[in-house]
Image (tube, rainbow, N blue to C red; front, side, top):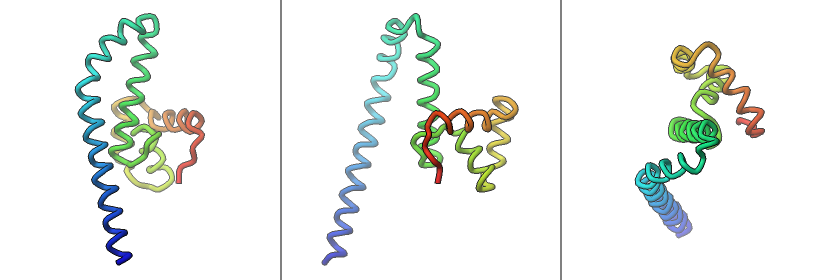
Length: 120
């Protein structure tokens, strides 16, 4: 009986979170282009900073999708995995090839100080 309640609770949580994910994804996908163009005019004087913020947000989305880490970009978490867990080093080399020598390391150092959130 307790086992059935737990299963039901887990199933309910899964479906609720799945619905929220799909809903958020659809809303963001549909509204982002319009909001982006409005904000280009709103933040015209700070356009470079606005584009940087969007880039970091998309990179963190990638980190969430790839690694289940919400506050870390793909580059910095890949560096962490390679350096401390000896995993995905090939991916780190590929990222560094695309974005320059020590890109992942520099990203990790910046985010480690910025996030002040320990990695487990």
